[in-house]
Image 1: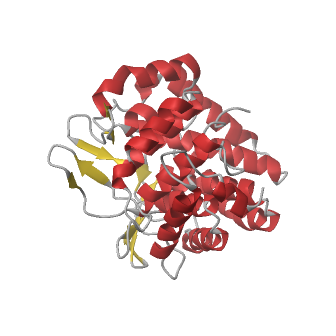
Image 2 (image 1 turned 90 degrees about the horizontal axis):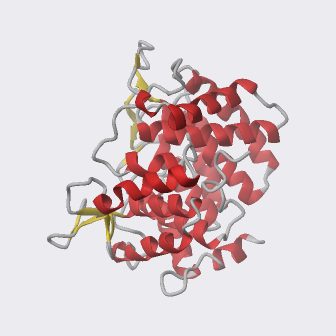
Length: 345
């Protein structure tokens, strides 16, 4: 399927059209800086994880050159040890720390873009980036299989806490990294063992992670990342559904606040689709369309007890999450199953 054809198929009847999704991709591309960076919003911060999520949406909506410029930014800003700084502002590093999940996510983005384009030259160019990033991330893995969340880049000190969301995302990143390694004919058994140890921690020793927080991401991310699926995943989602989901408006970011957010809602939709509950996933995507702006971008969230958008910003990564969710439920791009297939080898 050509890029134009799959973007045209990126539509949910009565919810969004292919043309609207193309406009969302264009809105993301319009936020891209000359360096290739995809900040949270024009003039805002850039972090390595949200940058990749936004690049993935560019790939889905047919903006392949812009997506590759984004991966070029990742290539050029990677540090010698395989990591990236936590934060950039207008091209300047403003937080030198290292987040293991932020560094791992490059594997998801690279595999995603390769699935869509089939561009072997791109994959070969990005392979050293993925290789060094994943080997850096493996240094954060504890004997119990979980990954420490961050470290001080200057001293090499690691912070021992293993966060649920970050580890769930690392699981998917390891899965994609293993697939990339096989594709370039350099399989790595250590990466496979690390992935399986992390899966085992999620499924058999959940107590090794920090307790779930008030944030919805700690609730659905083990399913989204692929570490927990099947009946266990369904039970996990059902357990806190009423705490987070506001019918007709979306999902709360924080369980006790009257605030629904587009990115969390759409990531939850992707998790539902991965469990086979595509009908409810579509309902969630539909429920968040009140955040759509006429220019194709999406506002971050809505405080529904007073009807105000907050924060007052149209975040790049929120628009990206919508695109990725629509792609997942419509099976449009060649990479539509990147979340659904996580951990299934």
